[in-house]
Length: 307
Image (cartoon, rainbow, N blue to C red; front, side, top):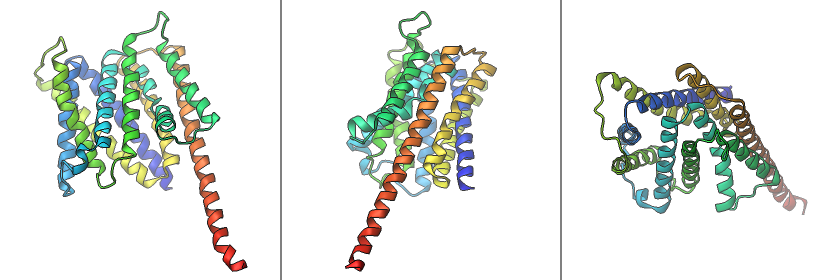
């Protein structure tokens, strides 16, 4: 029952993120990309800063300047800039499909940088997933859009963020990490403004609903993910992250009148299938290790009795 509740919360979180992406794309028709990033940074920093203080935690812990946290913030920055730009300039459905390759990139990074064991089956799944990305991007073909590389940039940044999070000191809470990550977006947005041909656009009354919607849906979805991970088993709940792609496809077609072509749909299917298979293999190997450890421990206790 708890797994089903966790899966439901994860699905709701993905729906929330898809709606947030919709608000961001609607905002992109009015504001320059750097300003949207700044809005998200200010909104997220205010919300998570307030939550951090309510938990009686300091906003800037000692670990804030540690290499791990700085690398995590850099990954958050790269990922946010890449994905927000991709949402603004490319179809929502294709950008969301490419984003689903993030778990595969995390597995790849864990194998390369943390030397985690990855068998040939998961290597094959990773390769297949990246082939799916190529089917969506289609480099060297007439349908290739260089702007879609911003979505790939988002995948790299978010994978870097997730990998760095593994080594963040446990004393640093997720609320503090989120506050620091959103704070990083603010000076980055100001820096990007110097290289943008578009200047600051003052929001009108009709724009505040979109801004509030993007911030509220983002924060609410974050809460839903945290709750889902705490209620259900991670290996059971995590595959429901891919429901975000379904919601993005529906929103893209209904709101933005997008028409995904067959190569894009095939590529998205390959990415999702590869990701789910990788998660399944990781769960299976984890269970095998746990059984082996349990068996070894049991034998270790039984041996003295037999002597």
